[in-house]
Image (tube, rainbow, N blue to C red):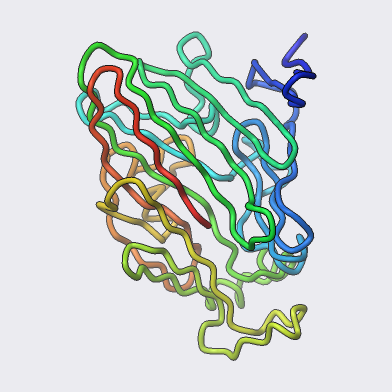
Length: 278
């Protein structure tokens, strides 16, 4: 069974069938800021150390596999249909959802088309920087105007130390504090503790990461994973995406997420670009 091929001219590996038997990953960034991304936008990000500096989650050896990650969800305001710009996590029928992933040197591009909407997502870490970029281009290939809502999603760790976050729930689920300032999400852990960047391995210090979006006005946000997903739901059908409206939740403890909602209207043939910085 063939799932992809090498593009020698562009020095990329192209995955033209997204239901690969295993997640096929790429590495972004440097020794200062690193990121793993898969062909379905799964993966995680870390600062200096994947074990002691990981600030977003990926659950290994779980079902469904390769979740969570760096997601864009799209909700159509008129049809009420929704999907993700990568095949997963929503997982639309491959008879209707067309997808192509291109893993290049320190960047990954995921292109898709569904319901007359084409999306191009580019993920990379700028050289010498300690943040990553997600560039999304949305094109209306339909003959009618389309009214869309776009939602970001990333799931944060409660503690940058991997073992503390995954095992020490009694501690880690009490030290998370999410906030939104000027439409920028602030993910804070141990926020009342001093910052000790010179002692990176000390997991008891205060730390912050941010998530911002440019290209359209933010109309809503969610920072509480359970509010965004809804009870007894999964990444495949988040309640906020299905309804088409965030609830402006702020997590204090429990599990944090990074969801910013923007609304875009596209005339036939029109395209718009958004960029996320994390």
